[in-house]
Length: 595
Image (cartoon, rainbow, N blue to C red):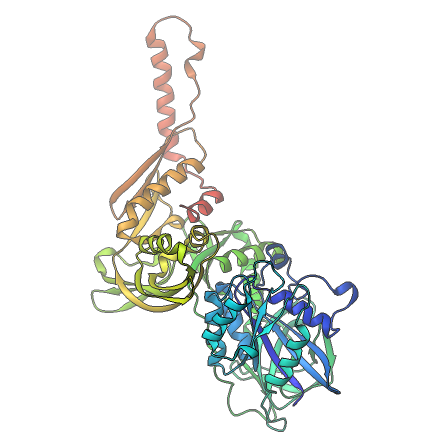
């Protein structure tokens, strides 16, 4: 056990985690020849196309140092704020962390929040200054920032380049010398933390674990403490580029177990695995439940696919524990699910994965957050979608979630960023200089305001320099109203939104204008209205397509033309009574991107 090292790589987006992981794999000869490609561990098509890491990936490496053999378990983590749950799980399975900072960009918001997460779990942090081969690198200034953040001596910071391989050996030596070996008792009853799982159509569910105490052999009868289910360990092994079966996985090691589990409800990430004969007395602590931030309805385009969508979401949930869902129905869209996501990027990725991995075509409704609604009797109800809102006359008050957001930016962009935050009803808490010309601004913002396009706007006004990180702070009373969209007097529940009273009118007007562009013209006029309760706040009309019925009249009395037009008018009136308006999928998506 003294020769095992478990560590993860944490950093802000695009600071070079995956490239650094590639070099480590190449140096330890874990991956060679034709398998060696850029971002080896990003094995999902989506990750390669977008150049981001979505899933944490575990892989084992062997390395010889001063005549002794060492085993490294490396976990590469995502950098985007929407996937911070993945990072927290990786940190729970490690004793050390490589903190990667880009020498050209310096410390960013996500770097700071990851550092605090690692310190909370008592991890040994090895600071690495990456990309020092770039012409724009500022190694000395960024080293100052790291010293200020971590309070470590300058000599502890390793200068490296994931691209060219500078400093990689130094990193490997630092892992051996600085990261502690896992602490555990090989003789104690088995306790293993499940930190991830995947679905394999041929072998059932494969769970990944880290053994804290005891050891696990092939053929053992094991059980999950939280769900109480028992299984035979058909196969156990370690994770290389592919899975490598072993007879036994020892204490402190990271591995996988295949036990023929078929239903996804039986495996919970964060659960503890133990033996049936000699069970551990309690589960492993310190694993937090995920809190979804953004809610949206996901509906199958064809209502017959409802059950397929349910099984697809269950399989996806195995691989992405931060996704939550429950069934709901809508008048306009039929049966579907109300899903909870960690953010908008997360929602987009889930939608793409459903299409690619499970061939599911889905419609997603306008995303919103959860509100606490208090009625006149003082009862509290959590509302995730506008349809669940009680009658206005029964509501005493509505509270909405506020976040504490930290934005780190260059001093040149302070003005526009403050304007953006104030426009989103932000409250400035403090601003302080991190170093030189970099400033950290801390705001309290309503989560509902930043859910849709805040991050994109922040990136564009700061030319990509500002970095953003947030956590839920508290719930505060707020004046919220339900904005309904009516088409020819019929309410479309999928387009309803809860919004602040100050923004309701302008949002309704923009929504009507957008829908006017997107709804195809019919044989009759379509009235698009935005309403708050019984009050109409905006209206647009999609004009009818009309046939020229008077074309065949040439000359003669005007009354002949009038007779034909009256007849057409009667027909249009009848059609309007029976005609209903189809809202294209494009319209639902466009409402999300309203600017």
